[in-house]
Image (cartoon, rainbow, N blue to C red):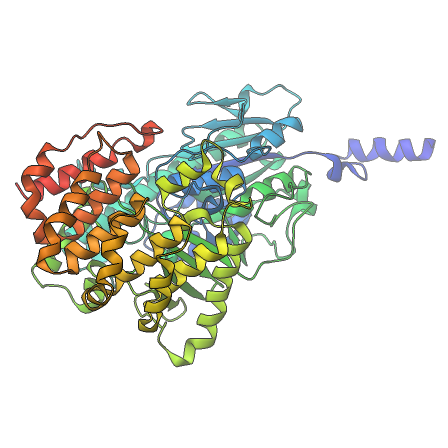
Length: 618
């Protein structure tokens, strides 16, 4: 015993920890996050970028070459991070929304706090899920790890907003990066406006890097650099149009740099090397279990991600997944998956164009000039695709096509990989009980104040029938008409909703063949059946159907008489009528732009849609 104590004393004098100390010490964990930028950084091989601070962190640590945010926009991405659950399983995938947190579960900082960690969040939360009690020790602009009790390990988040999409539009000074040296992606037109926006994008990524540098220096000055595991990552891909809001690699891939000090080397993954790279596929759903693992805590069984660091790290997974739901005032439903090389995109609403009008996105000059050039016929086929309806399936080879513009979904040579990724997408949807197939308003009505996650995992959710009808409707197989007509008689309103959408998606000939079915659907008990039926008849039916169909849409668009979700659905249906909608210009002016909604996060969408329609037909 005396010999052992003498050895321990000697080791301490020499600055060497005793056996077992490394496994019992708890690391501090620091997240340095930024907004709206992808891996356009020097450490990722982008020579045009100016990011010395994150590059230096990567030289000490390791980068991940295939990190996805799951959502290509902030609120659902952050919701996935904080919960360890796919937002598509919690009903929180819409931008922005607010739904109850699953019963009996917690946000991961609550689990850390229970284990003695001091948890702070500096800047913003922006979750689409209600907080299940106190989540942070402090969450404010004043929150800081320095405020912790002296003996407590910390988990701290510092978020930089300086690379946010909104900062692209700040032209008080000329861009510091030369617009002439920008690489314009194939899907964007090469114009001075686009080049200036891309140059400005690189400028604001540099500003985010400078913020990261300040956080790292603060840690160093406090003598905690070798006591702290550091993550640097962005909340989703680039804020430029067709990156942000789109579940392609360009919208989902984020820079992820992780530094694990030598003291905590047992928490490193096998591939960790100084200045190295990991090709492991990781995504935001994995971050909660990973932080818990680094803190020595197993993740709860209900978490849907996999720890990629720490004591409880798991073997690599073959795929990571992305999604797109409602983006502000416009509905969509897209799921994506990658194996690291190929990206598969499943569009469940292929009749909608990629470039649906979003007030916020149109404030970026690139969006406006891009649309103007489409309207005047100045775009090539690749650039023009953004302004057209989507194919049901897309497949891209990132190795030969990093801009994701050459759709291989119809390629016989790639049929096997498409089938594999399609199966992966379907398997995940079934595993997590994806509730995104239920219209947002219908979903909240069915859950009656409880969590959509709990409803989705209960017996009342006929997932198989609904998802199969969504598949049948949106793959656009002409032979599916009998199945769609049969679906119109289903007892579940969401099955009927997808059956009607299937008729609408197929256009004029199908609407004519199923005319009687659509007339019956106008009287359905669900507004989410009536609205697409009315749109189909108004858009593709005979002239005699138009007045009554338009009247039905206008009645549902009245926010004073309907909930916000019905009004949004009806207004977007009216918008799809194009020039025909001019006939209701006076009625649109009379519609109220105020009404009730379950949360303030929904309140701006009807006014934006009305403003857009009124401006078009004034």
